[in-house]
Amino acid sequence: MILIAYSLVTMLLLIFLGGYPATIEECYKILIKSKFLGLLRLDILTVLVMPLYYLFFYSLFTALKRSNNALASISIILIFAGLTLFLSSPSAFSLLHLSDKYADAISQEQKNHLLAAGEAILAADIWHGTPAVLGGLLMQAGALIISFLMLQSKIFTRLTAFTGIFVYGLDLLHIIFSFFLPTVSFIMMAIAGPIYLLWFPLVGLRLMKLDRNVKG
Image 1 (cartoon, one colour):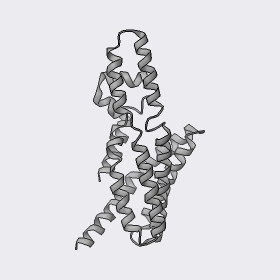
Image 2: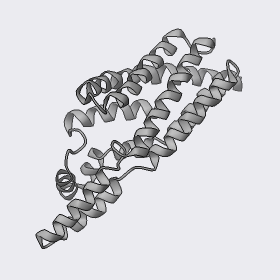
Image 3: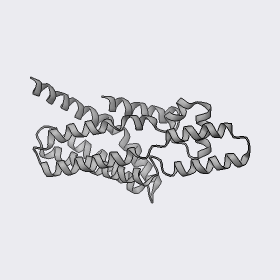
Image 4: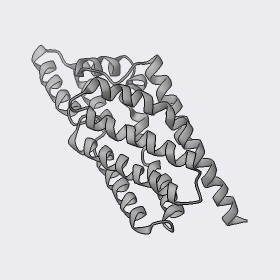
């Protein structure tokens, strides 16, 4: 349910606040004007919410491991490795620190140094850095395997399985296409985003029902 709320809030932020800042100067200006809104633009919600995926996918692994323990184990290893790589890349708080220095800088030379430092951090953030990109590929691949496992299991409906295959397959392609066809990649991401609002409830409600059955 938290992931559903996160998805909704993220889409609203994109509509009303805009996407990730395109340049380091824009980052600094946004953070200087409002630290709170600046951190939201820098995807701080993603950084805070992503650790919940450890619990979420472990729950799916527990539910599906009897269907195919080998594939379920591979999927959870890929997801956990991807998550760990992804979470090693956040840069929002580093940019917040540099923006304070930029605001206090007197000379243009100082500002240029801070801009250069910010560009280096921006190039290694959660959307551009090698660990984050590799982590994203591993996560989406693992989630795609889990979605295929749902087809072999009687626990989840075929709608849930096919929705997962579509959304995670699209997200996996979105990362791959971002290297050479960024416009196509953006369209894929825009399509995949709203579909999570269907997949999370389908999975979440089923997991809650399984929990009630076990306790009962």
